[in-house]
Length: 509
Image 1 (cartoon, one colour):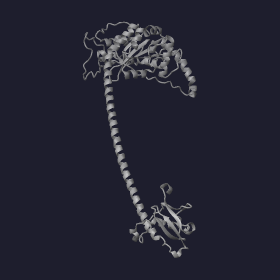
Image 2 (tube, helix red, strand yellow):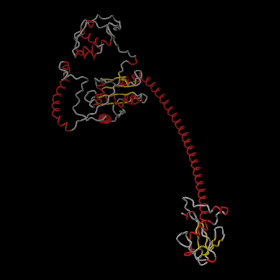
Image 3 (cartoon, helix red, strand yellow):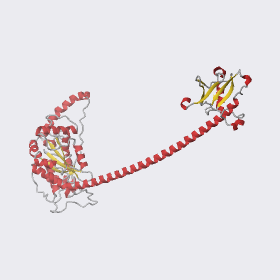
Image 4 (cartoon, helix red, strand yellow):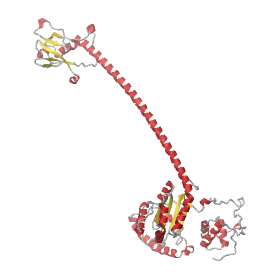
């Protein structure tokens, strides 16, 4: 480019570098480039965009070439109400110079349209490929034509993907893509001593951030001439392998080929311009509590010693901050674990107190229930005894009088042996039911002092009496049931001996 007599020694190093980049891209003279860069606040990307959008011709009196400032003088203008506010980017500390934020790439899945829609769009797709491929090839061979032809045909915003689609690769998910890279790598160069991460870039970035490790990104291009020699002589050298696998360095390795979509997106996000490419990413707590930044770059073929030197320099520079972050995280984890243990102990103590309180409530409820049941049993027993006594008084009043000797033919004389051993002789009318004999035995032990109340006794309401004994004739053994429809003369002979046998509870049931 033709040099002018304009003195640019008064510009800073960053401004001179921006000026050279702008001139190399736009092929403009220094007099025309300086106003555009000043209006763009020395941002090359904004200046280039303005140039190609046609805004570079709009100048003002304030944009005219000013005489160069003396050497060493500051190029900043004081902020006043006349010249407006000017925002300058903050100056980073020397320890953060040269680092850039690490991009987070989430690969987009390739979604195919339905078969019928693909069939309908097949002619349009064929025509598009027929026109686009020659244009891309022409644009790749003659890149300077992108500034001359309309942007809709040849100019592509963003990085242009290399022509590496000689053999189409089937898109896979990040884990399968990583497994395919390792398989192809080992098929070409043998078993790999480098432990490549077996998942996607985003997962590797998250793991390095979680465990505060260094993430080494290795991007390869199979069509590059130096790829094979770089892998054999540098990447697989003993010096590089020892540095990567050293547990003290805490390096996590993720690699990929730009033939895969994810690796290509990573290369574009990292502004990779030459292959093979390696970048070291680490957590930078000086920037923010969650920042992941690119702390070192290795571009192009590099000897093993230089490769290791760059890695070690970046590791040594950022290990101290990572160690502090690990210490802080470990202390927080210890505090969290202590709080969890305290909370767990408190919950256990609270659960024990609740269990004891529950047991006390259950014991109290059981005691109250037992007392209530005992009280109900006692009341029921007392009621049964009252009803039995009332029934005996009432039934004793209902008993027929004993027939006299003159009625011997119309009566039956029986001898009843009581459970106490007492023997009772009595006559019963032959027309009386057998139940009359049972009632006589039941009422025999009624209290004598309550005999005067028998005339006033009534049958208990709702009470059904059950005889708790039976009358048995021993020889031959015959059981006489308390039946009301069977008469005494029909089943019991005269002068029969009857024995009163108490019934057991199971026999009653």
